[in-house]
Length: 137
Image 1: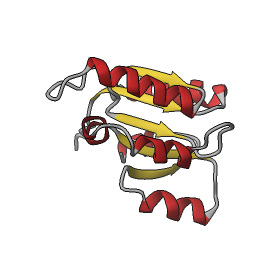
Image 2: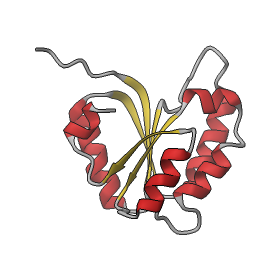
Image 3: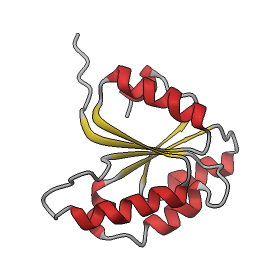
Image 4: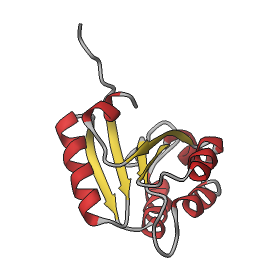
């Protein structure tokens, strides 16, 4: 039986923990699910990146917009839920193109429930990212 894994053009990791970003980057690279990985150690920087890339992409072309965003919940300055609130203000082109996976160490059932109710979140995963969890996306 052959397992077919979807290939994404761009993936973005948003996590203030640089070690987690490095580990997750290596897991994604090993899974060979994308061409490019963008790393951001803060939600504000990730939003600025999306706003800037949005200006460079056109309706039929995702350009460098990430197909998949792995988003941590617990970050300083702006947490994952605040990111989602700001993400909602972006253009429909960005919101339609980018799918968000909450990748967190939070075991709080309220976080899970809140994430699953958000229309932009397609999956809720607990850290660490594994080859098995990547295949399930």
